[in-house]
Amino acid sequence: MRMNAPSSLLGSISESDLEDARKPLPPAELKAKAGKQDFDLKGNSRALFEQVAEAFGLEVVFDTQYQPIELVRFRVTQLGYRDSLRSLEAATDSFITPISEHLISVARDNPSR
Image (cartoon, rainbow, N blue to C red):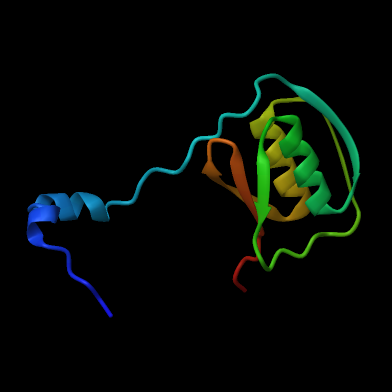
């Protein structure tokens, strides 16, 4: 059952307001810990993303269909968070999407064939 609120509570919404509400928001910008780090890790891709993200003060959620690669060696030196995550994306055939300032989503990169 749908209840309608009195128009006096909602006020008036202009066409311009509706148009603005339909515009997509820009992607979230990560606010990770500054600085460069070294990584020498071995494990499944899920664990590696969690470890790298944690090192930069970020949290990770995974796509519900994410199937981790079982054994990955990830060794990089003196990289900031952006380059570390990009390198890990390439090493695991995955991609990240910022969700909020400290949260990223990880999914497998499955190009259409």
